[in-house]
Image 1: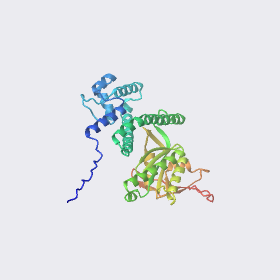
Image 2: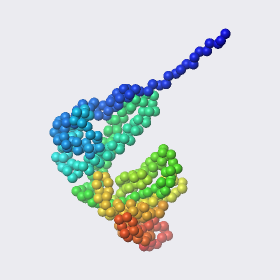
Image 3: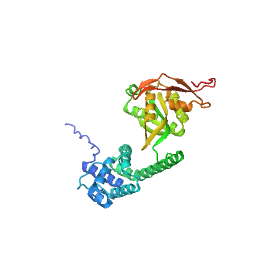
Amino acid sequence: MSEHVQPETQFDAEPEASPLDLSASLDAVEELILGEAPHLTRVQVAEQAGVPLELARELWRLLGLPEQSDEELAFTAADVQALEYSRDLMNLGVLSPERQSALVRTWGRSFARLAEWQSTLLTEVALERDDPVASVIDLTGEVLPRLDALQSYVWRTHLARAASRTLATGAAGSDVVDLAVVFVDIVGFTSRSKELTDAELVAWIEHFEAECSNAVVDHGGRVIKNIGDEVLFVTDDVAQAAELALLLTSRGADEDDTFPEVRAGVAYGEVVSRLGDVLGPTVNIASRLTSLARPGSVLIDQGAYDSLNVDGTGFGFRRLRRTSVKGYSRLASFALRHLEPTDRHDRR
């Protein structure tokens, strides 16, 4: 008699969310973020805000938002209010024709990058849970008001400090200010990055950026931007810039410190400050000096040298041969170091 064999029990895999379920979830997330479901066309938004449609389209384009047809229900009451606020700022002269494009484009670019990072972070957290689709909705409802409040807090705090700094330096109404500009560049970034996994590379760069940012803030400077393996920051005081550059290069030379080996360039002089960025010959010279600097060294320009070459600053200098670099046929540069207690009159 043959033995009766029970068939193996089969366990069905966790069903994936259907496209319909996912679409409904995405709609729910969008409604949470926007405050209501989109129900207005761009024509209706412009009419309700009292703004010409072409101006509204130009503002949305500058913000980096996709073009919509006249029939597409892609807008909410928040879009109407945003256009009304834009109209008010134009009437106040804040969004003048000269400033409008650059300012609005900067808003769009900055917030687009921030939104991409935040949505990625939110999705990663949701994917770690049993029901990712439902978790995205729950997390959005919990996280959004807190993010909104924190972003407003950070912006207002920086605005207050920027306003105080501008008024204190008498730079109000002028885009040109005297600043020390510093570039700090990782040595051997290309070869090192080839040895790392994607996750290791991201962690390495984030560590570099975080340590630079902490040091700059602690010394009263301002980070302007991170450019991959390079950081650009400014200070009002050239001595602070010199100290920071020497600090970061010394950390990079310390084998027991996880901070990467770097080199730095410092220039001092007039800088055009525009929309949180800095422009002009002083910035260009600092960049050129960084490319000329040896690993672990700091090069400064003539402007920084003239300001630092006084008794009591504690810095020593070595004049280097003038060098031709892009845009400058005979660029003057000086190697910077701290004076040792035994050094005397090292001011060459």
